[in-house]
Structure formats: C-alpha cells, structure tokens
Length: 441
Image (spheres, rainbow, N blue to C red):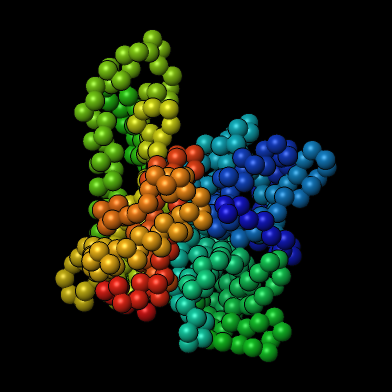
C-alpha cells in the first residue's frame, strides 16, 4: 500500500518553515499531496522567500493529517507541520515543488530546486544502510541526516515491512539515538556511535522496557541518484528521468563493477526508448492533427521504482520499472530485471533462468503449476478465464532472486488487462526443492 499514516509523539524533527503559504491546506488537496509524499519518500525543505542558501532533507517516517476545522488541515510529518510551498520531492528526475505539483498557487518559490544548491552542512542525503541486530537478524535502513536530525525507515530482510525511525546525532560526541515506532507505539531504540568515514552506525538495540539489548551495526550501502534528460527533434519534445542506486564502495561487494552494470542496464533501456520513436517522422505521427495537444507532441520516459532484492558474495538481483509514453491513449510500464553472478575475480556475468531452475519439463511444470494457482487467487483475468493455462521459460523473462525464493514479475498486459496493473508471484525455495540449481542463504 502506497500511503502510510501513523500517530507518533510530537518530536519536532522537521526543519522549521514559515506558515505563510500552504501549511494549512483544504481536504480536497490531501489526496494529491499523499501521492507525492508516501512513507519512505525523501523530501527537501527550501524557503526561497526566507533567503535560504541551503536545503535540508528528511525521509517521511510518519505523516498525519491533523484537522484545523471541518474543511482544512495541516500535515504533520515526523512530528512537525510542513509548509508545502517550501517542500520538494523527487519527481521525474527533478526535485519539484510539492505545492505547485498539487496545483496550489505558491508564490516566489522555484518550481524545481537548482541542482547547484547545496545541502545544509554536517549531514547526508538519503542513504541505504545494511547491517544486523544480534547475530542473525539482517536489516536494511533508509536514513537521512540533516541539521542533526535522523529520519527514515528500516526493515528486517526476512519480513520486509518498513518500520518508521526518528532520532538525532549529537554534533559534538557523534552519539546517535534512533527510536522506532511499530503500529504507532514506541517499540525499540537504537543508540551508539556514528562515524562519517566510513559512514556507519554501531551500538545497541534495546526494547522500550530496557530489559533486552542486542548489538547493532550498519554500514552505508547505496544512495539513490535522480537525473533528467530532455530534448527536441522533428517538432517533438522528449524527456527521460532516471532514479537509480549507486552502491558505495566501502559497504557493498563488487560495488564498482555492479555500478557499471546498473548504469549500462538503465542506459540500454533509455536507448530502446529513443529508438522506439526516433526513426518515426514526427510529421507522420501528427498528420491527423491540425493543432496537436501538448501530450501528443511529447515522448516521456521514467525509469525508477527500483529494488535490490539480493546482493551477496555470489549473486546480485535487482528490478526496476520503465514507464513510457510514445503515442496512443496512455503510456505503459514494464519491468526490467538485472540478475548477475558476482565472482571473486572478473566482471559480473549474466544469470539466466536455466542457471537457477532446472530447465527440464518436469521442473518447469512445478513452476508453472505454482504460478497458475497463485495468479488465479490474485484473479489475473487471462489466467482466471482460462486463456493462459501454463507457462514455459520463454514466457517468464522477468524474475528476481531473494533469500525467500524466486519472484516472477508480470507487467501490464502480461497476464491481465492494463487496468488490472502488475502481478508478482514468489515461488519459495522450499517449493522448488531439488528443482533449484543454486542455494541462497
């Protein structure tokens, strides 16, 4: 579920901004704002009318709409109100003003943050950390540190549900405190030491009662990057926005080689998008229009919504999506998976489905039967209607690995109508049994 609302004690973690434009909004604006500010989204605060020379960043751990009266409310993010006129979110490869994005008439604010504008000193923008609690519990944290305040989420790798965390770093001692809130209640506290080189946290996790404590440590693993390319040609406008991870050398195995592989995968997707329309004369496409509307004079692509599902000393598995509009009634989206072997020496090598699952007819029938049964439960129309009754390896081009199993991803139209959206099916390792050719620990 994209939206997440959670009551948390007032922590006053959000950067302070004057409430002179859109700290108070109408109920009818809430849905649009929720779309741009989901849980886990990094946002930046920058007040041009105030003379700000830097921006601050936080990750939305909690967001609560608080009623002001019957028709108006204010949004409480991480325990403090925000003014949408001074709030920016990463949208289509740019940090765009949320008020303007929601069609609110904010004044004297840039629509897009200048990429040359500097962050507030002494912190870091959104970074993913990987580590563990105790000897067995692997965790992933997404954190931002700005003006001494820590915000973000974390998840146990074997569960995946994100838990809000908010806290602070003492600028003098570099001691940190990070409290977690599950179902609106304080459920644990991380404390310890923060270091900048290498970027890491190490200390203790304890329960609220203080009678249970486990060692905790996490190192910086990856940071997201957004970029945008635009151009004109043949009377047409094109734009492509990327959101992709850059693995940090100190915390990720084979980071340098994998960063090249990730960039190449994104670049290949972008080139396919360019090739899909570059050879078509714009005049032919627009011939039936006396005055073509703007959407019909533009090609757009957004490559993002990525997830790294497995990364260890042997395998790397990642999925991302590409949404494209190249003419027609609507755009379309599809999945791209990057599955690699990561040997100790040499470059990462492609990992094929036949390397993971025995390609025999017997093995593929086990996979196909499981997929059909699961997709019927999800009511994917082509399967539920009987139009699709089995899958071969060629029917399953998009899949990812995890410690739980192999997940098959189906884009719109693959097993259902466009309106039904996307589908995913996890086939657990225990279901595959001896049909699996690899073991993931």
